[in-house]
Image (cartoon, rainbow, N blue to C red; front, side, top):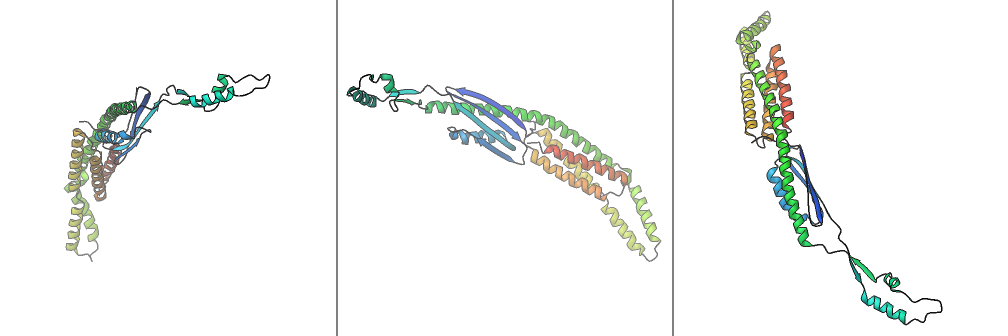
Length: 294
């Protein structure tokens, strides 16, 4: 299983009978899963099923799912009000028309309001049910296309994350091998500091040596280096395993950042401080890229 990003887009159109529709999906980065589903009038009954299908395949990100649909207008039904037309004819026939006035014609009577009515063709519930089922089928197709796009971007993202982890591991090894943290170098710096302080004859030399030993212990970065290596290995294993691992990677990135900050704070060597700075930059860039992982 590969990792997936949280960004993607898919659009699938379909139609049946008088209905045509299009399902559009768009996803962007988010801390959790936020589904925003919009359905047109008449398609509300498919909302629970649509939400279930979207939630099964997508685990993180803000997802905008929009169904647009329209129904082609059918020829209206024309009806003649026979009762009203009969009454009009009877009324006209009983009129005594003055000379020069022609009797009313049928086309004139039909033009009167209420004689001819146009009625829209009734909406077929069976046709609407067929359109709903077709829309759900297109939702599945759009979901498959969206997942393919997110995984393709995730594969490229995974390579970049692995490269960052390799760089973090290398810098951790360089910090471990840094000449400035070797016992001989540490002893030399402490000896120089102690000798400088010993010029003040009022100091308790035994106490001074105890404090020097405590400072040397506090400046040791062995634990930080070990934890950095462990976290980097765990992150690499997660990427290799794939799946929705974004939150776990983000947690590990925070932990690595904390260890790198502690390492830099403990450092009393210029070369080690420079390595610590590079570590912090690499880890921050790693964490920024992790924000795109599902």
